[in-house]
Length: 382
Image (cartoon, rainbow, N blue to C red; front, side, top):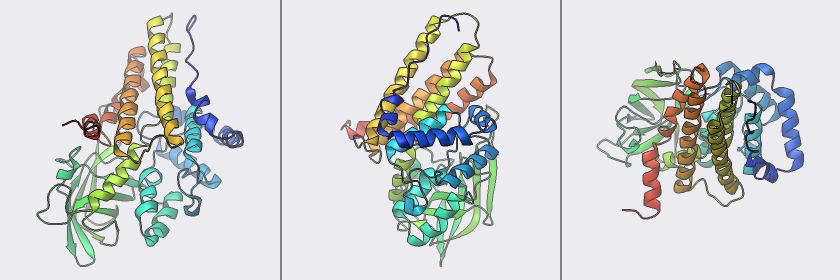
């Protein structure tokens, strides 16, 4: 656009980049420039939902796995890269800058780290290598028709029968259940229990008899989430994490992991670049729109500064209030960016789809209202 001013340089240079050593940065940059084909970049650029097209995710996973970079946060002894948070931030942003496919893999990002932290040695040996090989695709079975943000009111039943639990009930808004091989879920295992008591955290194979998946079509036309029905599904009691009646404790541990990584600076910068492309396609000069884009860029820079604080121990992402604050800021900013993208390019099918897709951002992993309640409780509000 003639006469427009460019996007501000991201604080990436001062934070994530500055904390990752030069040799690491050069290695990452060289790998991405060599391995990211134009087809993979196009798939990443076209992504409007939680993850890129399945073929692109699979192809990109294989290239990362061959280099040992598919699980950046995992310790080396479990097949991960063993990177520091500073290195992971650099890699995430470098991938976003080059439009790499968005993987958003629950196996790597959430259940894998939980198994490493709280699983048995047998579970680590069974599940972790399969996740790295791409053999296990995981989905999360938490929300139910009457238990979403108020998860403690869940009614899904796990009835003990010898060495098995028999599962009955349904889960809803389950992302990618239509091709997942496994689900981690929360179930009520003590008859008559209420609230957070009497729950168990289970790892369930999706091929077991009695499981039925029904896709939910969004207004955007995409079908990333599903209803999942369980009718007398048997699963071993041993396929659980933690004690039988301490499922809530395990679920809290997992959610602290998930909330810290479901909306990253990389995703926000991808959205900003999409808006930039929309403005560049306009004829004429629109100072107000440029000013708005500049303001949102500064907000993303600020959010990245908070991620950088976490990278050198100044912010604990396992702490519920800190995780809630980051989740709130990131998802609401993501919505603000995509809403402006639709204003800037109202005829763009991509902008429409991206706008609709991010409406769910302030609902998944706990609604914004729930997170504000967590923050209010943390500072002593009645």
